[in-house]
Amino acid sequence: MASQSNSAQVWHEVEARREDYFALSDRVWATPELNYAEHRSAAEHRRMLEQEGFRVTENVAGIPTAVMGEAGEEGPVIAILGEYDALPGLSQEAGVAEHRPLEAGGSGHGCGHNMLGSASLLAATAVKNWLAANGLKGRVRYYGCPAEEGGSAKGFMVRDGAFDDVDVAICWHPAHFSGVNQAYSLACMEVDFAFTGRSSHAAAAPHLGRSALDAVELMNVGVNYMREHMPSHARIHYAIQDAGGIAPNVVQGKARVRYLIRAHTMTEVLGLLERVKKIAQGAALMSETQVEERVLSADAELVGNRPLEEVMEANFQRLGPPRFDPADHDFAKQIQATLSPEDISAAYKRAGIPPMKDEALAERLMPLDRPLSEGIGSTDVGSVSWKVPTVQARGATHAVGTPGHSWQIVAQGKAGAAHKGLEHVAKVMAGTAADLFKDPALVEKAKAEHAARTADSPSVFPIPKGVQPPFDMAGGH
Image (cartoon, rainbow, N blue to C red):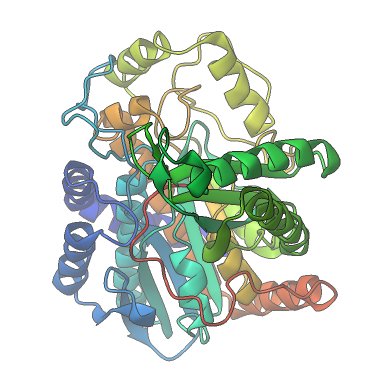
């Protein structure tokens, strides 16, 4: 394990470069871009990689907004993963505790990915400089990964070999509380069902029409009945993408609905998908329409790695919790005033920690061993975790209780707490990587654990062969 002085060295590298990365985070916040359209955000990260002296690879896995930077020679390869995609409909002015969109219907960083990519690149830069200063062998990589919000870019990158020679992957996510992330997520698959019928005049000749919109409605009803007869942990969501038009006097000849299916494992997801397909076929049969399906994206469930989690936990303990100033706490309290008691209670339940009275910003660490979170989502980091040993951090960057994918997260995205949380978690990730480079036996231990965990439960790779990245989509998991 690395010494205290070793940790202090790499943390000093973070501190030396933090202002530039606060600025990077704020620039990405100001140009929110959706799945696979993150051209300006990816360019900002590419420019920073070039400025820092990384060897840059663009168009990773054939994805125009995926970028990778590498530094160092020989030795183990440790990847630090970043993201920078935004969400639709969450445009919001920064620094105000009321809903005030900058652009009606515009996008916003409602999951904090402007901070996510910046902190990860800051950590990678700190490790690069630390390796050089200490004359150590090893390669650190920063992966700029687009389209986490429903686009599964990391899964396509894994499938196309971008992680084939990586030994360990490290990443993080903005949160209410700081600590090692529990390796617990839902596998998922996103599929479009497009129905084709026959248009006609809805009054003069309705008997000649076959409504694709009716088919979508029938499918939705059928899936709703299915919910009673699936595992309680599974989730199925849908959103109509194309209702076939806005004229009620026309029988809609086309309509399309998007389904997102989640469960504990990809095997369960695929089983549920087959049942959903049968319902779609039944809806087409009842409405005398045709249905075609298109897989858009899919994420595997997370695979944990106890050795890596213990290394990261040691870094959290050495560093201690993040610290915020009175102005940070004051703004967080203003944000909490816009939330319900249920929002705040849910944050504690999800973290698996007891509530604390009047806690606007969390200046404490979640214990490594705590009850499993209540209410979990999906992440394309899961697909990476089946390929290489992976560990994630959670970093406190916003008011306790702030709902995910909300205007309130956007409002806090450039605040002082966001910057302080970004720096704190960058130190944790950099320290974790430094420990691994200093002690290659830890890397081997992590790889042995990964091999043992995946040997008896081989992954069903989530993205079918032949499926290409859905460059035409937008949305979120």
